[in-house]
Length: 68
Image (tube, helix red, strand yellow):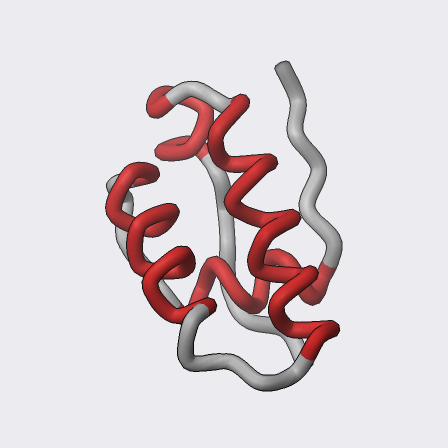
């Protein structure tokens, strides 16, 4: 499976930098309750959904870094 992340999605993942997919999903999910911006909530939910369907091996191979 080749999950493609948008620049915004990659930036969000980079904020929660970890080589542990489950930890990134948990940290993003926990942060959602502190957000008041609908777009950020939608982005966060979308990223978590994409992370759920990929394997740990695929996640480790991702080259995620923040882009401006």
